[in-house]
Image (cartoon, rainbow, N blue to C red; front, top):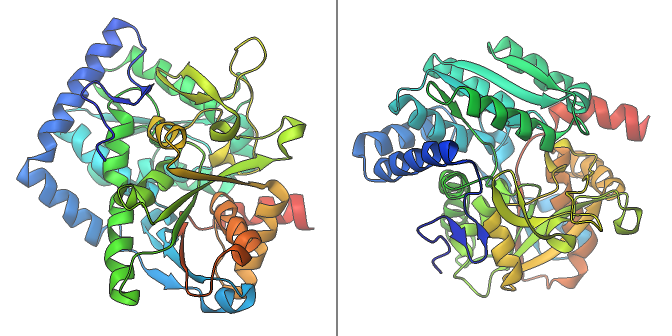
Length: 394
């Protein structure tokens, strides 16, 4: 299935809805990105850094204890948490960092919620000898102190964003504003498969290695494709990365687990795919949470990286076409899964990833014992331990 059109639309979603000056900047970026696909030196360097710097391929781990305990399908965890910097985010920043350097940019700017993308961006900026500004919501800074310290140690300038909710959406607003003011020497290294074209396509392409590895690894280990691929969804980079290679495989279920926060009826959630309406946000059109007046509504999740009122346009298209299986997990279910995986497998997941774990913990009985479910463990939970313990457990 070909999902990207020439003008960056995925069905009715995507595109570029920005002032003409910035449209030109993004058109130039799209052109350079297309050139990089056939640039042998660029692709060779990308592959090299994936192997020796990011620590790819990441492990596909059979969760034997969890499988036995849940009495459901065979459960595998795609261990993106074992990557350098502790999450899938490194895949994208290596690609965009190399592209920015190739284009002669001297500075990277980025938004971050949970801090994993900020850390990854600061990491590649240090490696490439570039300046780095990270925009982060004030509320997230308070909840994700370990990652803030890591970014600063790596040499990045962490800029608190206090407008709005002080969360991921507001950090994107601030980063876009900074990009408009200084695009000649700066590259905006967007962290998820969202935003105006070419970002959703570019981020997906740098993340699709996750699904490509899952295919190779599960065929070697089981001799067949998985029954289901499960991933948490905020903006959706880890989900589209894990799922993209399997979109044509109609027998492989693609499960998108959104943050239900305090529950749908509470209004405090991030269920963009389930409850969103087609709306323009941050320069692109996608399913977005809106109020009765059509204004963008505040999202909520205890997991900072999922606290975003929109979602990637490709995932919106897949949802509308019926290709996605939608699910959700509340804060309470995610915290329970966070502790559960820690104690049954000795693996502490990111609170974001714990939403995907919560799905299979709750739904294991719907699968047959011969089924194979791969959960994309998109990040590790070091950043969340203090917050989860102090807020939900102590």
